[in-house]
Amino acid sequence: MKVGIVGAGMVGAATANALVLGRAADAIVLVDIDRRRAEAEAEDVRHASPFAGGARLLAGDWADLAGAGVVIIAAGVGQKPGESRLELLARNEAVFEDVIPKVLEAAPDCVLLVATNPVDVMTSVATRISGLPAARVVGSGTILDTARFRACLAGHLEVAPGSIHAYVLGEHGDSEVLCFSAAHIGGIPLSAFAAQAGRPLDEAAMARIDEEVRRAAYRIIAGKGATWYGIAAGLARIVRAIDADERALLTVSSVGAAADGGPPLAMSLPRLVGRGGILRTLEPRLDAREQELLQRSAAVLRAAVGTRPESTP
Ligand SMILES: NC(=O)C1=CN([C@@H]2O[C@H](COP(=O)(O)OP(=O)(O)OC[C@H]3O[C@@H](n4cnc5c(N)ncnc54)[C@H](O)[C@@H]3O)[C@@H](O)[C@H]2O)C=CC1
Ligand SMILES: CC(=O)C(=O)O
Image (spheres, rainbow, N blue to C red):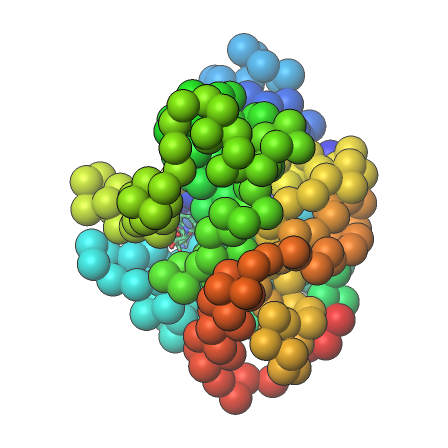
């Protein structure tokens, strides 16, 4: 499949590299207002391609997105140290007003895959501007937070992250919800597994893991200015699910029924992803406290979306 990437900064370039190394695309087109940057990144990643599947890399114009099955939007500003994702909204909404119509003119049949922050609100914005059905506008949502959660649990429990079924839902941001209650390893609830493994998951351990996941971006941004490897791997995972029509269960964002029972809103829930984007949204089974936190997260996003007109699924 041909994949377009709009925004050839740290996230866009790392995603191109992850797609190449993961053999998740045949051709990748990088588009950026900074054409020189896009060309340099395309050339650099092109030199990784012979070590993997040989995907073609191009820095192009909008018209070069023609035929792309997925177009990833990673254009816009990122957080400065200490800044929250929601503070980026006004600046990145202006970028989307510019780029989304150009993408759709060139690639009217693509799935839009949104990475730009605040990613849930930007998914709502992209759905509104594009006029596409909600299923075709996928936000990376909490796919990264879910990976961080599994990585932390894997470290604590000394088990492979791939054997852990655990999810982060809600906002990709400060109000996200780590769902401990439904998490399991091989069908064994997390707490029972932890006891068997001699690695108790008490309140203190859960609070430490929560803090580690929720504050990960702030720590990384304080240390190196931005984050890119984790989200790049997550975006490549979503592209693979779409391309191979996997019906994979991923925590991604899309405008749809919200946890607070209000009008449609983009937030992360467990969703089946395959050809065409979101195929189905599942209702998570949470304990009462997590359910309440998820409703609060929806309220935070609803306040951020404000009075913007929403696209309904
Ligand atoms: N969803 C997630 O989990 C994550 C999201 N992000 C977000 O991804 C976005 C990009 O981050 P970085 O790559 O680090 O930023 P960056 O500053 O390195 O790259 C952004 C690129 O967008 C380009 N751009 C800006 N306006 C444009 C326009 N109108 N048309 C075409 N290109 C345009 C810039 O020239 C720049 O090359 C940020 O909003 C950041 O917060 C970052 C990490 C994780
Ligand atoms: C920057 C960002 O959203 C993250 O790393 O989670």
